[in-house]
Structure formats: structure tokens, C-alpha cells
Length: 260
Image (tube, rainbow, N blue to C red; front, side):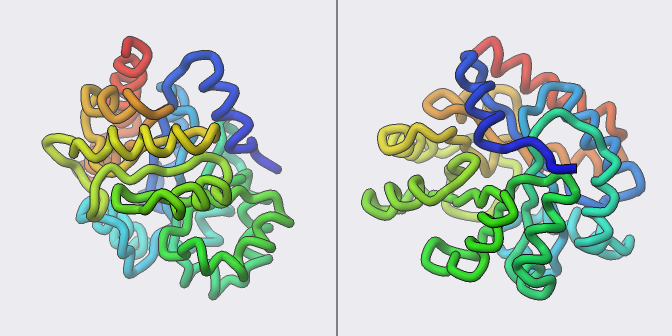
């Protein structure tokens, strides 16, 4: 199973005029986590991040931290999660989201190849900055894994351009300075950053952090190509919700984005 290319598929969707919706599921979060993944795709997600839990998730806020901790308590492991993905047949790109300790311990080549064998063609490793891609990037490139980089509101122009040049799949714009999580409103910096990114790259620009409602999704995507939604979806699962309920929220966001 080789999976679907991230940038190719997202560009194709964007070029039809569609706003991109990237969702997130914590791998190993209960026995039904793959059903949650399937429900997201059925409801209109254009790509899905698969969270590979780590005990010290520095970028993640309380909800994703809780989801990761629960998955770890249930026995989730990186290769166990990837093994479970092998029989999940979905028609969107999958992106692994994890931390460098997991990659380093597994071995760069082994980890990259394992992603591809599981149908995962993208990787988001937020604690590996642009200057430290040296060990991971060659292994990822050789295996055909697209490494997504993040850009923050305070990133200076010259570095922003370099991040966009090196990022693969899409460029992940961070709406706020802080960790992931549900918020009552989006910062005005989100639109500013999206405009800056769009001015220096033609790669898909997707904004994340704090997108919790359909209205927020529309606002975050206004100056960008799309949005990432994570904590609001995992909160449903943590509160005992079923895959169908997660799919309902994804469907609401899909409808709102399509209406603009």
C-alpha cells in the first residue's frame, strides 16, 4: 500500500475551487479509532493527520495531550498504529503527526519506509526545525514521504520564504502563538499570516490551531486554501462520542467551507 500523495491530491482539490479540510485522529485512541478516520473521510475531509502518540507532546494542548495519554495507556505504539492502518482503504492523503524522539528511536529510514507501507505519504514532526532536517529529510525524500513544515505569525519574511520552499505536501500556518486546542475565537494574526504565506508560495496553505466550529473554519480559510481541525474532533471521542458524531462535525465544517 503506497498511499496518496499529499500535495498532488490537495492541489487537485484546491484547483476545483474547494477549500481544503484536513482533520486529525489520534492513532490507537480506542478500538474504533479507524472507524473515526473512515467517518472523517466519508464526511468530506480532504486529508487526515494520524497522531502517533508521544509522552511529551510539546506542541499539543490539553485535548490532544489527553488523547495521546489515553492511547498510550491503551497500549498504542508507533508500529502498532501503522500496522492497523494497512487495512484502512481511504481515498485521501494520510499524514503522520508525531515527535522526533519517535522517529529517532525507530531509525529514519525504517520509520519513513514504515509510513509508506502503511499508506501514509506525509509527515509532520513539529519539534524538528528547518535547520535540523538533515538526518530525517534524505530518508523521507528517498521513501517518498512529504515533510510538512509549520510557519508561525512571528516568522520573519526571509525565513517564511525558505520554510515554504522546503515544505512538502502543504504549508501549515499556525493561527496563534501557543499550543493546539479549542478556542472561542481566532486571532487576527491568522489572516495576516495566511496572506503572507500565499504571497510567497503556490503550495497549498492550510491554517490550524484553535479551529473548533464551522464558522471558525470559514474564517480561518478565508485568506488560505483550507484549515486543520483536531482538538474539537478528539474532544468528541474523549467524551464518549461515536465515529458518527465526529463525522457529523466534519460534515458541518465541510458544508460551511463549501458555502463560504
